[in-house]
Each structure stands twice: as structure tokens, then as C-alpha cells.
Image (cartoon, rainbow, N blue to C red; front, side):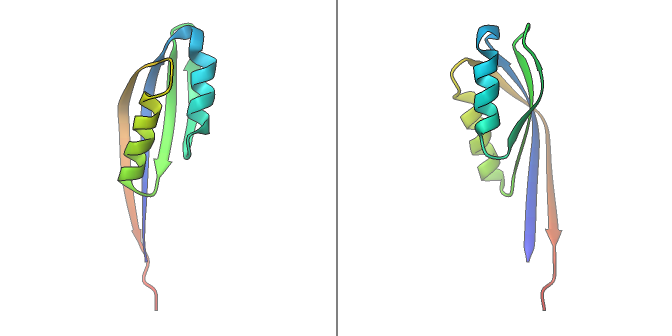
Length: 87
């Protein structure tokens, strides 16, 4: 059995007036968590994880489509494959 794991670190720039709504929407995306925020400047640090890269890319695209989001920048990506032999 093969298990994959993808994690991405993002910086999300949002309109400062909408930072709370954007933060809540990001936290509602599966596998997503707002790790830090700067409400004054409208910046959020977001961690996303998924078992497949296409799912992770869809999550990132969903973040871009949240009302009030100005930009999403990928700053980190890691993929880990763990194989396990089964009898």
C-alpha cells in the first residue's frame, strides 16, 4: 500500500477590511489552516495538506477564488511518499 502526503505553505494577501471573513473561509477549506495573520496589512500564512497533488492544487485555487483575496503565493511545498508492504 502506498500513501502520499502533500503540504503547502501559502501567503494570502487580502483586503484588510475582509481579513476575518477571508480567514474564516480559508479555515473551512478541507485540510487548510490559517497559522498566522496580520490584520493591519491583510496578510495570512496558510498551511494546506492533501493526499494528492491535484487535490492540493484545487484547494489553492479555491483560496484564490475567495471574495476579498487579492493574491495567493506558494512559498513552500513538500511531498512525502510512504510505502508499506502488505502480505
